[in-house]
Image 1 (spheres, rainbow, N blue to C red):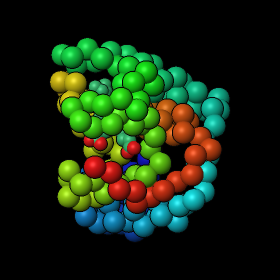
Image 2 (image 1 turned 90 degrees about the horizontal axis):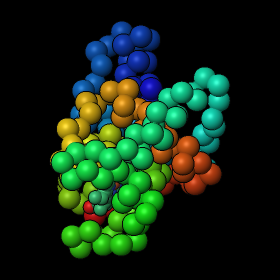
Image 3 (image 1 turned 180 degrees about the vertical axis):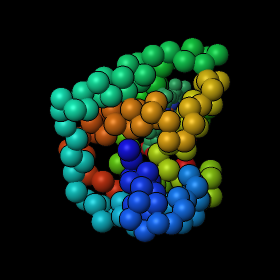
Image 4 (image 1 turned 30 degrees about the vertical axis):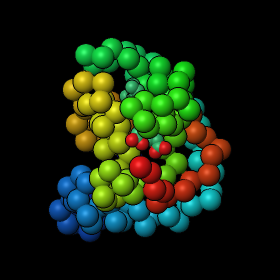
Length: 157
Ligand code: HEC
């Protein structure tokens, strides 16, 4: 599970409250506040026997061509980072700043919202919030960014 789902599990299990909706203000606020406690600390992510299968599926998804445009995450974020796409610099897709304030959204949003944006951009059907596919991608991105400092809440165009 990711941080948002951990918060919701604590809400329902221990506080006997209803879960917050994905991308709702209370869930994003809590995730941003908790994420900020780690600002400056390196991402710790390891490949363990328990997460190995999910990590490998996440890596596979990252390298798989998707959508009508038929490109993979890696083709943009590993092979072409630093280049321009419609005037925007392609970043390396590190998840260090999430939840993030995005100027285009005029609000804070989650990593899953960002990943879904990249999927719609290549005309792929985005996975649902909380889906195993998005969680495996998040896991792989965290592992790929291991050692990098957290910067929640970051700002992006
Ligand atoms: C066609 C190129 C392209 C593809 C394919 C693509 N992205 Fe992106 N991605 C971008 C661009 C461009 C941005 C920055 C957008 C902006 O700032 O407007 C971005 C942003 C991101 C970010 C935010 C990084 C940050 O610094 O906040 C992440 C994470 C990300 N992409 C992950 C993915 C994943 C995972 C996939 C595959 C499912 C993917 N992207 C597919 C072009 C792409």
